[in-house]
Image 1 (cartoon, rainbow, N blue to C red):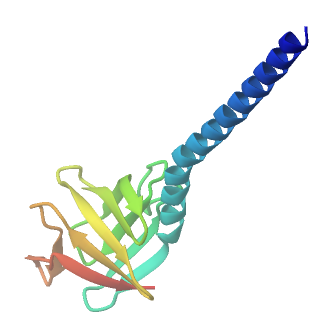
Image 2: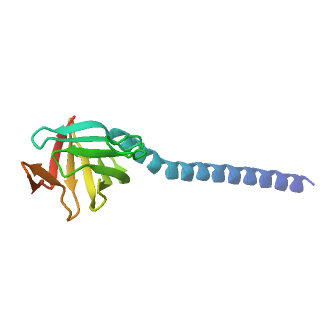
Image 3: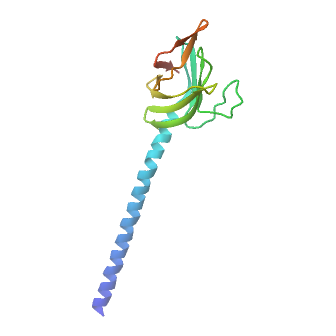
Length: 157
């Protein structure tokens, strides 16, 4: 009877330890799954505000954490941001492809819907570098002519 009691006691301790280990494993796994999502949301929160390039006369307004920016002159619900100024129309940011650390990739489309491309956004201290990734170029307007904009444009806040 004593052996049976010890056996049952050891068995209960073993089951308890096993359940604690499983609980810890699930907590660890859950935090590992939530952490990347949290980091991406924090990265998106950095990309918010109005930026301008004085030389090219282009304004960039964005909020990558929420598509809540109404585009002036359009009856579009809202988007993640837009490029506007001395370029061929407005370019709307409709999708956040990825956001990690100080970099984000977004999908843009021209207001006419004919051109679309991905832009790579890189934040530094007080500036935002926008790099056109695809072959489609956003064109600027000089006088009455379209001119190709540089593949990399630096905006300041």
